[in-house]
Length: 580
Image (cartoon, rainbow, N blue to C red; front, side, top):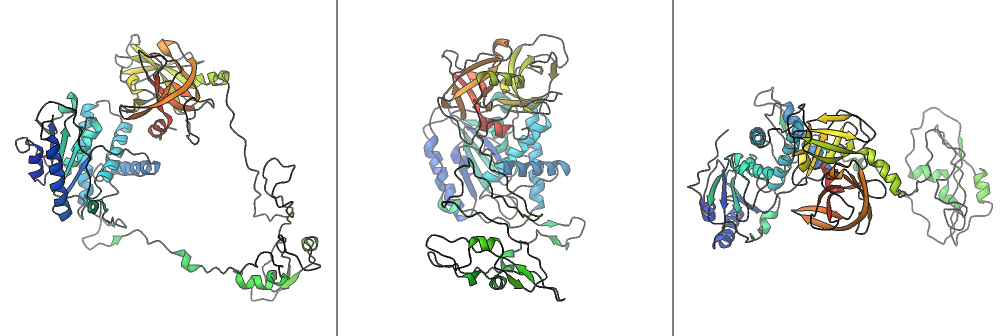
């Protein structure tokens, strides 16, 4: 892969970046702030946006990166990752790439380089962690590259600026864009990357002053730049085994089936008018509805009975055409056809203009006596409400909460645990959810389960997210997972909750409290609750009164009284999407 031009002598200020031009990609950090910081940013935005409107380059400045949340997107990018693995990591698909094999290959090799750098930061990176990282890279690439793609897949003269990037996967994403040929500037006026990321030496750095507290102004994208360029309607895949004149396979055009169907709807009689019996004769029905093919051989007539609709208020039926006589089949008409029409099911006339009888407690489907074999009856609606559980019943769910013993020495070594935490069973195949700071404290773990004298040892960290403080480990045992709250009716302050964990090593302690508030801590939404917890409770379950997990115990305020925090159910559901 071509080396990135990161010579710091070329770019020392924001103005230098504005005037700099390179087709190979540049990755530069400007750390600190001075008196000219805001004015230089505004001037860069103004001039580069104007150049972008003229079409001479592409420019964008962002303050944060998007995170994937839609399950449909997760499934799409998971399949993209699987294809990348199957083809030997040589090609990878993305929504925003046009018909360019070279772009596919360049993105695939660039992502491979980013994963190599990530492994230097995380030597214990598992295949599952790698997959999640690639999915996030592809999703962010598609979202951030909106407006940057041209017919070859990438702009040769594109500039992207961001401010105060500190998280390792965010930092590596901008490295990916630099590998793809985009000039990247990170304005680090408040904070910078940590020492481990600096050791990668994948970006140049210029220090312009001390870290400060100035707020970088929000970038206002010109209206013309917001208009999304049209994407390719179909992705063409050339036959690789053929020559340059090979046929191109295209996705089939959708068939407009609505043009193949003609529907004729007869006019309904006006309300409060007598219903004419001739409007419901079998002859008129065959004129307006689709009929079955008629055999060429003569056949006997079929007697068909079609009851009219019951009269409404102000309407009347012709004499002799009573509901009872219609139901008994007294009015019949011969029709020449080979199609035998089964008699319609009898209906009970409405009582007092209401569907439910006074003795009914729930709405049920009408009961028919003569139902053809190819029709199914509708069961009654299930309106049984959920019932809240007692504290004793919720306490029995502790069998699905585990204690995690953390060992600092290598797996299989002898020794005593250095710390302990808690965990929640989330998957039958041995998956346990806990906090990332619990698994970060050691190298392997022992899992204790209630009513089980065994300790299940493992060093398998399947997935983790340091910002959310979530981690998943796996043991070799079939588990009974707890349900995760779906969030249809939401949660609210004052709602009763129960916390189960192992505070100070006291296995599966149960405490109760209420939701006392909702907070945002370091950009992460948290549930504040009053159920008492202590060190060792981290990773334990916070349950509602239906026995569903609404949060995972994460932290407590040391100098406060029952001021505790939990990562909410929506973050858990997204993080554990593949395990639930």
